[in-house]
Image (tube, rainbow, N blue to C red):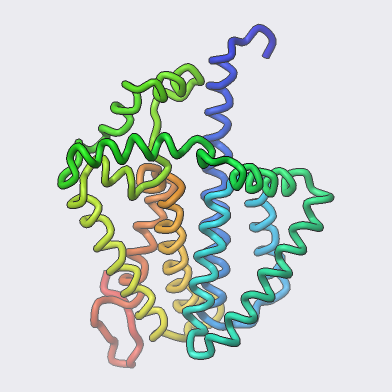
Length: 286
């Protein structure tokens, strides 16, 4: 490290950031699929299942990545409330108790584990930062592009080129970041593809998610880690991806969009379109 220029140091930091960011994505998908799968099949978790969940959650905390952590919690919460929607009041109360206990546990754990404390500190810093950790300026660039061509946008991949022409882009370039994204998929789609492009993404995504939740709710059985578990794991993965689109770039990262598209296909691979075997079991046709 001795003698390294500031730009070289920032380049190394950027490379390290991409590495631990990828780690957080894989941990998030693992945690969400595990938790939503167990919630969906309504099976009583075994001791080793609980240990696995705690290990995944703690590991995710240690990455200090806020976006994947929040998206994971939201995805699991939505699945839990939807699966138990027939007794919503009691479910919401249980969820509130679980959240309070989790916050208390994390607070206690933060006093002993520096990585957990660092994650909590990042949330505190974000609440005190009026610029949203510098992302408000990135959002302003996206809105400027959208207003200039609201219907079809400025073209796929044009956002990073536009930012590079601004003083903001010059600053990031000096820090070693050669290409910038909006850190909000929906805004970047508006900037690059306009209202038409955003609709072409959102409508299929929403229809696929709704279909997945309906089919998963109607399909029970398969035993522990069986078809029901897989279906709800796919639902959780889709929700996680769509929520994370508000604060990250999952549509542009293969480690994010490949599991997402796999989860979309997985539901229809298990349930099919309207296919039933002679024994009455629902099965896919892919």
